[in-house]
Length: 264
Image (cartoon, rainbow, N blue to C red):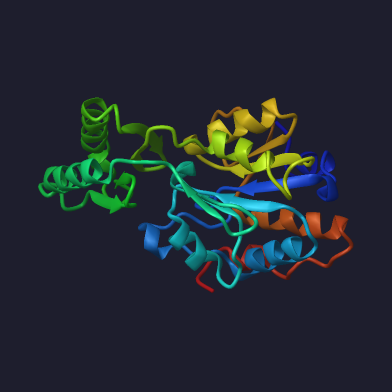
């Protein structure tokens, strides 16, 4: 696979629609999800692209309300919880239909199952649940067994999605690939070449979708992937965004590297 130059060379930003994962792509992964922040330079670059009329959206496992907090003051088209929630460019929101009473029963059962493992962090996303073991890597197999057991027993409701130091139970039918396809059927994305940048197993469905659509898929960091190009890090994504701005005749925000390494 190529690097930053190869990934940039094939793209004319005026003809592209850009989709970005968040954690590990636009923001460094932190010990707990609530500690994550998007560096100011990356926020500025996304704002400039949006102001130039370049279609872009964020596609994340996070909830829409959390994405809006992370990207403030920007309000971007977005898909949350792997596509279970979606807001289009006009601000209209759609949600997968889910059985909330059944999900509440799963939440209570999961909380009870995790109570004996205080270092295992259960994140409640309303319609999905994430078992994080980043702070306790020795609990990986415990988290895996719990997630696999719940996915099996609630297969009509939830599917298992492994990620970086997390096992997630997401609503059946939620897929980053499918939500990218949906965006590409609507304005202002339709007629553009889709580009998706992501870093994790959760993003592979998105890579496959944009590849099938004749787009450009970019993996951040190491590991096997369906993506056709690779960038090394969040800092490299920042520099790559700067090159997109240069291609539009705009100066990039300063110091991408420095601003991805510490709190704003």
